[in-house]
Amino acid sequence: MGKKIFTNFLANYKYKGFTDDGQIVNVSNRFNKLLGSHVSADENNVVVRVGSNHIRKTKYGYLLIVDAHHVVFFKDWQNWGHPKRCNSFIINFNREFYKVKEYGDFSEFFSDEPSEELSSFDGLIKLAREQEAYYNNPENEATFNFRSDFTPKM
Image (cartoon, rainbow, N blue to C red; front, side):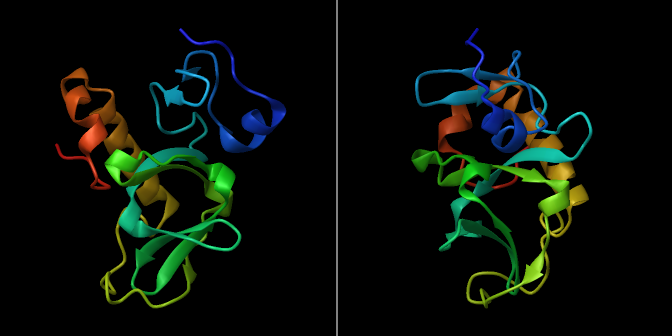
């Protein structure tokens, strides 16, 4: 497979909760691939693919839009990738720092009903497991580069 890729920063921040012994491998000089579980063993870190319509760039990083008036802020290093053809972001969230906050007005694009998957970290774990089942199914491999929705199509 690929060579080991973790530095202290990667092990303690970006890929915290995941391992470089086959779970995250180098695909090329610029790209890494997550294999297997999208939820860390201790269930404190998850990796999810989120549609770009739910993400906004800020001065200090990014925000994830949960509903019309709630967001979760996250840093650049939590963003594992932005596949442009997929119109999505691959993000690592940590339970300790996943805080839904009231911020802004996105009612033009989103309803006041909070997203079940995004409104709590436990909902995010459920979403990560659904995505894990989808992405680890070889029958779905042909559609990976063209999926733009944030929940898997089962």
